[in-house]
Length: 257
Image (cartoon, rainbow, N blue to C red; front, side, top):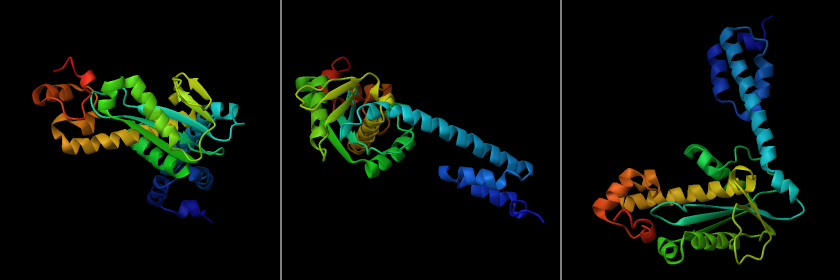
């Protein structure tokens, strides 16, 4: 008697494969491994490759949690990172994230290494699963007043102050934040080495990008939706043609106007 798999059309199996979640890969392989039809065996092989990639990602994420394991005696470990130190326009935004001890999130990474779609997906997951998320902002005016580094520190302190519960350890992307009474561990390239910092990077990046899209509606000539305030040539050309907006950093644009 033919197996259920052999009686099933290849079109239906292909549709099932397209709808597979990561947790269903093993059962799909087990169910169709004995099916000798070329189209089906090809789908099984694709599923095996996806499963291999998933295992590699789990191993990568295990390494990404190495600092969190090292400091596991601390109750609330906070990753912190900023986005927007380099643009000509818009705020600097800091994110602070406390992940749960049993966090199983995959694909966390430096936000610059992720596609916009993946950042958006991870942002939603982080906001749902994190113990706490805090955001801090600093304006172009404040950046001009005290310089970008000090303005970044202020945004970071604000982000941490909004966390509930308050953290007892900060994992920072490279910097040591002054005027902070919480123990800090600066990590070089931390957004690519610590899951908590990566999560903070993603939250800050998505938040700032969404803000710049809104600013694009107010100042459409500058292309903020695409360049996010960075110095793309079209942005510089618009700056020279139309002059600065209220969200431009005067200390950053002196050589252009």
